[in-house]
Image 1 (cartoon, rainbow over the protein chains, first blue to last red):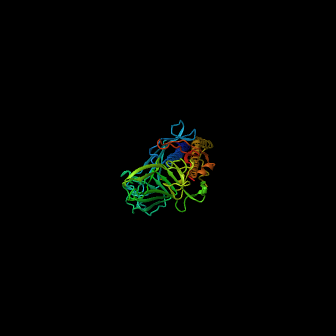
Image 2 (cartoon, rainbow over the protein chains, first blue to last red; image 1 turned 120 degrees about the vertical axis):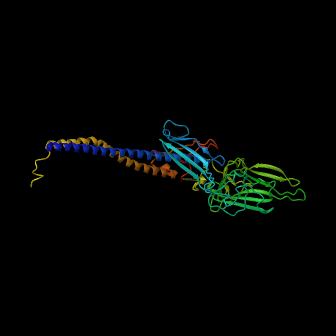
Image 3 (cartoon, rainbow over the protein chains, first blue to last red; image 1 turned 90 degrees about the vertical axis):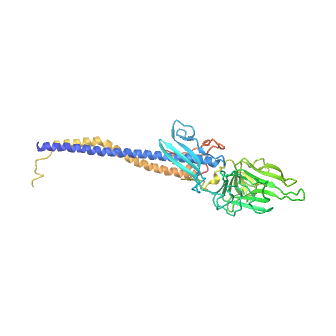
Length: 369
Length: 114
């Protein structure tokens, strides 16, 4: 074999090597580019799924905030789809949709973690083209009125206690329904006989998730007057019943007052002024109160001839000089409003257009996890 | 100086031309693959940057209702008055904005985010 032949063989070898090198280089580049494309596609779907999950959680959160206590969403929600054609979220499966979200609302049951136990959690899981993402929102760990730092009432029995503590964050008033069905009420643990006792709950916002029935045990309870002052800029009530048993002297014995009232106050430095809401008194201070339950009333009792309680009349509480019930209503309340003795300008209905969730702005009702 | 310059051994012009032709053919054969791959990689990089920009824009829109309404990057925002996800309760509709930035969609309830 001559030199030229050897060079020819070498040229073929070089050409083959070039083919291999180019093929390897091209193939690697192609694979890398395809992997990059896949990564972009996956990232896009991942972000789409994340925002869709957040949308689902936001939708259910909005429903949760709007609903009153006892009627709030719980358990598995309807599946939510995003319809590409209409650009709307909907509950029926559309022909062309971006993805869907499944949302579950639950109460955290974790006695080991006292900060999280009892909080509401919204878990939204979305799926976009097979890519799944989850968004979780949990109610801010609010204080409870029965927490030792406040001790406004007994969690187990619902009895209201004397306490000077006030809170600088929203407070939830919830008795332990697992232990008893007692509402928040006044019993003989409050001191004094035939005297005026004032108990005050003070916080920026107070949410009653349990009923407050002050005359719960009036037949066997203490004498005297008890004013329960709820001092907050925003108040959400569940069922409220105040009681009235004025003193009587039917014979030679005098029967004392047993009067329980709820007084609404606005904390110092908070609230809105009357002129902002068109109130008669432009300088008066107002807060907002929501009566979420169907019962807001006063029980009027009277003493019997021999001392027993002879008469009980349930009086539905209404806005003074109107036929509007307080129950299921939303109002601006004037500072120092006594629910059992309403003045004409004590309560001003809040327009329906105002969202219930507005008072929660900035209070961190839910936090994303 | 003898050696490299005086040597008679080497490639003929024809061989060199053929070799260049082969190399050119091979390169041309692989060029589309290489060029399209490079283009795809470049596009992927640009798209990834876009996605992060859109994501940031979306976060801003969700953080502020007024921003969501006015931002030119938000292509659509619609009221959604009658979505009921919960059969219990008062069945109140849910109002808010459907916020759409690029291919991302989310929801901002009325009265929140400002």
